[in-house]
Image (cartoon, rainbow, N blue to C red; front, side, top):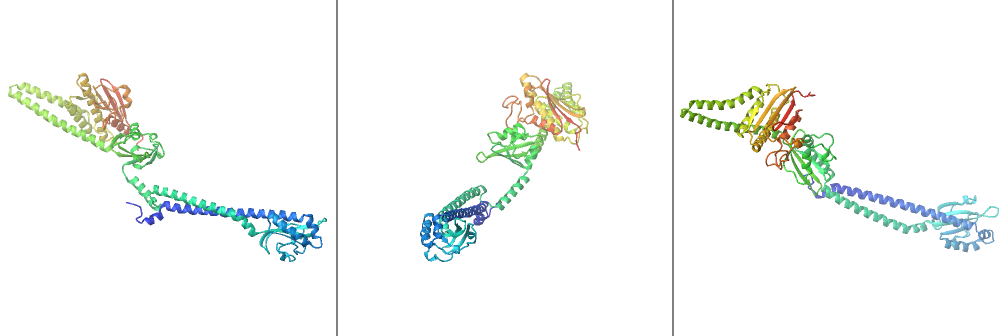
Length: 548
């Protein structure tokens, strides 16, 4: 089911990339506009401060000039001061230099028509002997001005000097910097918009144009799928660290604690499983053993070296059922073979009778029956557990078909009801069946090498509160250097393996590994020994410690 919108225009409007682009453009525009306003205010403040400093310096220079003091006390101040004021105005770049009497009547002005008229502005502070600055609207318009007193030798105020720069002149000074500031702001806005567009385009590619609601729904579907699938799923990144591990995988691999972010080889998994996951080739339906389960492993690369997908299927029950089915099938085949052999023996007896050799016929028939009956009687008398008894009889028949004599030791005895309910018949079949199969194979190969009669001896009894299952063969035994690898998946000594005692290909080499896994799961142990050949012993507690 697709979570994408069927309306392309709506999808573009609602896409996460589109929303992010709009937000980024708004933020960039706000930042640029705010920066431009702050820069404008700063530039205006700096220019006005510079203008105040300039008019203040010019005003004090004029007020302190001896010629000005002489002129204001002369008979015609305007005639002397007007040319001087115009010259100072031109030299300093101010808008006006006005000299006036203490009543505020102008003696100088850029507009000669204003001479003799009252000064427009405040002169109270200057009459008190202090310099006064303000922004005031006069005959030339709004201006930043300073009014300062002209003092005589006795420090009396005899005249006033006002110097100012119109706001229009200040604005003209700001025009070029403001144009540059506007250009920078527009460039910053353009760059921010382009960057936001490129980032949005990249995000759109990675999110496939989906919006926040679609991504949220996709995440919910993703989580629901991971929780519902029965297969284990593990995702690794390019550094072989776990990115994702669903609940089924955690159960199959018996993982404890948080696995995300940890290297795959730091999770305590079996070495063969880690090697298969990290190997150069993709695994296809490989069977591996974990602490308590048999799993089918598949791996597949993600993209171009981005990581790896691992899927796991529980194969424990199926493998156990397959083992039981193999035992039943083998038992049936053995019964069929025995029926065929019985027919042959019957024909032999009939032929002996027809030849008139009745005594030989009786001796032949009773000898064959006694041999088969002895084993059956021994198993039935010693092993009261029906599953074990049936398994041993079936395995004995299979072994006989391969020329191997399977015997039950005299000290073997397991009464019915001794085994705990927690120890399933399936686990018993897995352990004893694989031990016997492995011993029969080893005995056959050992007999071929030494020309001896192949034998397998089984011991099954209760010892010190534990169930003891021991299987010995007359094969070549197990190399002491390989003892630690015996119960590793893939180890085998069967002909056709890569090397004697080495790892086998395909599905071989699982029997002893399953024995060890099943024994551990039931709180037991497996030991490897040597007599004429290999001796493998399983000990299982009849009462679980810490149960309940």
